[in-house]
Length: 395
Ligand SMILES: Cc1ncc(COP(=O)(O)O)c(C=O)c1O
Image (cartoon, rainbow, N blue to C red):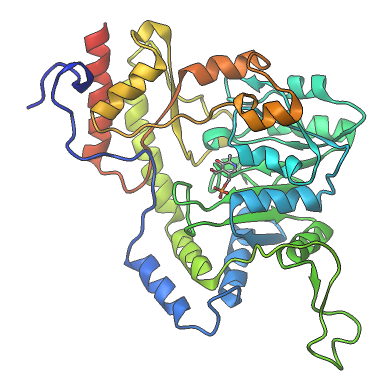
């Protein structure tokens, strides 16, 4: 029997064991698939990687999927394939993980931040319009928590100014927008398969596109920019040459086997995430001073995060809320420290705190609650009980 006092204020913790905020779900299905791959001829990039790419391309409904070692390297390749370079400006959101901006910074282009629409917590198309200059070459919107950015409006801005769009869909694998898979929108979309994401390959990422030339460029850059089919290769089969500065971002058949097995369970993952979200919504919509995630509007997202906003009226600030959850052994996290707070972006590009007020207002209140398919019903109840008990105490 737990006491009425939250653990932070002297009560017993709701749980004995720490519950993380996210994590993978691995069963014998995944283990068997990886062992089978391990016994195959390739443990580096081989036929299983190709099968994984084909399956993702099919699922998203695009012509090409190029697997890479992470969402970060996928963004790097996408930025290079887009042709971003020195002198170019690439507009993106400040409320994201640092890698989103690296689609620009890795190519020596300049990341230009534009403030968010606080409802979706994604980049505001009007703020994008305000940041366009003659040097703007591209847009990298991010689908925060899995909730799509304003795709229609952003594509309109891109059309008006002839911009290449790279959708950072690292949070959004498995969701749909107007009935169409998220990631199918032009020009490229990027996924991450990190263990906390909607499906995992351990580490891993992917770029998807309908554009043949971009896909060819992505594949070449992923593997040393090597031309394996150069003139002379037929008579001298060892003859292969690098034609530019490429990378080794190759993934292994082991990772792809894990990814394929996870895709078999995609629907079950989405159903479980939706179930947990429905229980959270039901409980937290009763608490006026917590803002639950936005209405999905025109989409059916596969939410990666359940991010709430803790208002002042709740009775404590965000830091105290996080401390209170940790005291209950409920893992929570904050996504994200805005990019313009990071010393790197400040030193390199002159950003300062105060530059993006809407992002800052949302950030000050954000907390991501545990959300992952392997959570039990008791885990979900513990999260709800922890927050309800804290709220009663502070009221
Ligand atoms: C929005 C976003 N973009 C990019 C990344 C980078 O993905 P990865 O960790 O696979 O490099 C992440 C991962 O944390 C992310 O959340």
